[in-house]
Length: 195
Image (cartoon, rainbow, N blue to C red; front, top):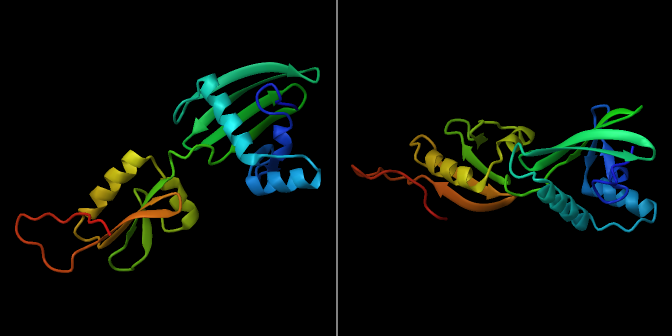
């Protein structure tokens, strides 16, 4: 199967097999190792930029945006769809005689890189907002846009029972809220402070 009409040549070669049969992931480490072992020059960031440009030209905008396509490569017909799920691009291709394959490009965009974490008052465990996940892999599901994360940060900071909240973009801590240890005066609302 060849998706050369869609993306740079050999795109599928740089994708690692995923745990699900027929699913492949484009990940930097695998792609660079594969290219290096075969003497293929690879500009991974350039490849991602080319994919983003293709998505934009195809009309794939925000979350849920998709496009259908058909074509012929190596004498075989293929059809498929490319869909954006938050920061990930999912490309599902049905090829004549080969069945279907899904290519996933996680982290292609960065607008869903914002995360709000708060500390549980009794256990001291960190949890994500709004899903209250405490496992790092599950916390990733709560990554959201800047606007929603900032609104969530403000909202969680106003909860009197919560004493500590953090706002991240990617892995960078942008803001942290510590509850004031002193009692607030009548009419004074608790809220975030820049730290």
